[in-house]
Amino acid sequence: MRKPFGNPTVGARGLYATIVSSLGGTPRFHRASLIRQAAEALLTEESERGRKVVLILDEGHLPDAEQLEGLRLLTNSEMDSRSSLACLIVGQPTLRRRIRLGAFAALDQQVALRYSMTGMDHKETAGYVAHHLKIAGRSDTLFSDDALALIYQVSRWLLRAVNNLATQSLVAAFADNKSIVDESSARAAVTEVTTK
Image 1: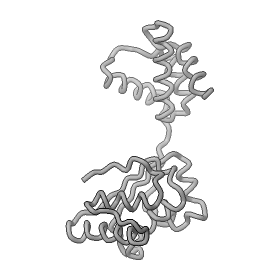
Image 2 (image 1 turned 45 degrees about the horizontal axis):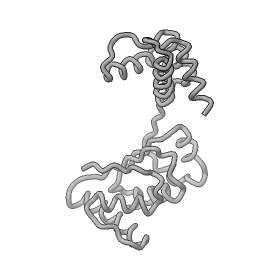
Image 3 (image 1 turned 90 degrees about the vertical axis):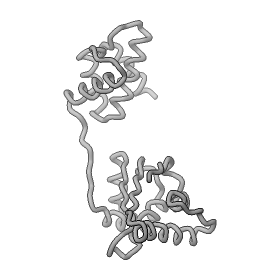
Image 4 (image 1 turned 90 degrees about the horizontal axis):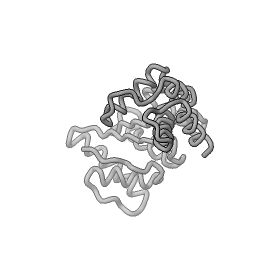
C-alpha cells in the first residue's frame, strides 16, 4: 500500500494522523491518544498482517524539531529491541548537518544507514540532459557543448539546479527564436536563475 505524505511540514500531529489514516484508522483528536493510536497501528500492521511499514519522508530537511522527535519516538517504540516502522528520510545536504546537531543526537544514533549523493561530472550532466530530452521525444542535439558546459559549471553538479538551468536555457533559446540552445541562451538562463 502506498500513500504519499505530501507535506512534510504538517507537524508531529500531522505525521501521526497520516500514519493512522494510511493504515485504515480514523485519527483521534487528542494528541496523546493519537500518538498511542499510531504506535498501535504500526504494531498491528506488522504483527497481524506481517507487513513492516516504510515511511518515506521527502524534503526531510523541512520538518520542525517536534516532528523529527515524533518520528524518532515512533521508530523507538520497543526500546531499540525492534521497530515496527522503517523510515527513509530524503532531503537536501542541510539535513545531514541538522541531524548531527546536539538537539537531534537521539535521532542521529538511530540512523542505520546514511547515503549522500555526489554531484554529477560533466559527462553525466550531458547524459542526464540528453536522457530527459529523449523522454520528451527529442533525440537530436538540442544543447550545444558550450551550453552544457556552462550548465554543468553553474549547477554545481546538482540535479535540481541542472533541471532549472536547462529549462530556463530552453526558454531563452525559444525567446530568441533559436533552434539550438547555445552558450548565450545558457548565460541568459544563469542570469535568470541566479538573480531570483
